[in-house]
Length: 360
Image (cartoon, rainbow, N blue to C red; front, side):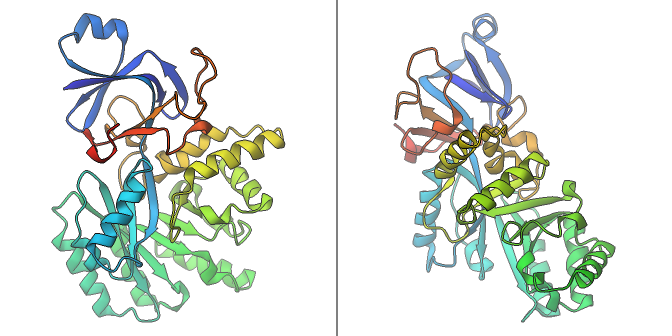
C-alpha cells in the first residue's frame, strides 16, 4: 500500500482538485485522501510526491490496426509508441488475431478483435473462433470483441450464431455503417428490425457515423452503443460540429487511431478548444477526456468507474508536469485539460505499476 500525491488531480472526469492524494493497494485506488487525513491515519505509509504535476486517468486506444506489423518486434514498437502517449488499454485489430495473441506486452490491458468477413466466413471459422475463446476463457488478461465486415453478406444462420455467441459471452460487436450506406430507407429499416430481433444490437460499436451524416442512429438504443470516431474524420467544421452534437445528446463517442501512424488525441484537444472558443459554444471541451476513458468501458467489458480517478477504480493514471509548455502562468492557476500534451507527460501507471519506460 502506498500514497501518490500530485499537485492536482482530475477527479471523476469532472473537476480538477488540489491537495488530494490517492491511496493505492495492489491494482486499485482504495481511497481519495486529503492532506489532513494522511497526517492522521497514514503518516507511516510510503508516499510518492509529484509536486508540479496533474494526475489524469490513463487513456484507451479502442481500434488500433496492427496489420502493418510483420513480427513481434514491430508490434512491440507500435505498442510502445502508443504507451508513450499515456495509453494503457488497447484494442488491437488484425486480420490474423491468432498471431497477435502470441505476442505479450506487460502491464497493459489488451482487447483482441476477432474480424469476421462475410465474404469468406464459414461455420468452420465460427468453430475456430469458439475454440480460441474457450482456450482463453480462464485468462483474465485476454478479452475479445467481434468485428463484422460486409455484414449484409452474412447468411442468416451465421449471423444469428454470431449474435448468440456475442450475447452469451458479452462480446462487443463492431458494425461498419458504410456497409449499408447504399441501401434505401425501407431496406435499412428492415435490416435494423431483423438485427434487433436476433439481439445483434445489444452491445455495439458503430463505425462511419460521421461520414454517413449521423443517419440511422434512430434505430439504436444509445445506451447499447459506442460511436467510434477516427481522428482523421474530424477534419471539417461539419464533422466537428456533428461530433459535438453527438456528445451533447449523450451518445458515447470514442476517439480511435485505426491506421494512424501517430497518436492524435493531444492535437484534437487543442482543435476542440479552438473550435468551441471561436464559436462561443457551450460545449465543455474537457468532455473529450471521456472519449478516451470512461466511454470505452463496454469495449473492455468492465464498469465505467474504472476509467476515472475515484475510490475503487484501477490505479491507472498519467502524470503531466505543469511546469512544461506554459501549462500555468502563475502558481495558483488551475491547469487546463486542453493544455495536456505528450511532451509534458511524465510517469504512466497501469494497474498499480509504474511503467519504467517513462520515468523522468
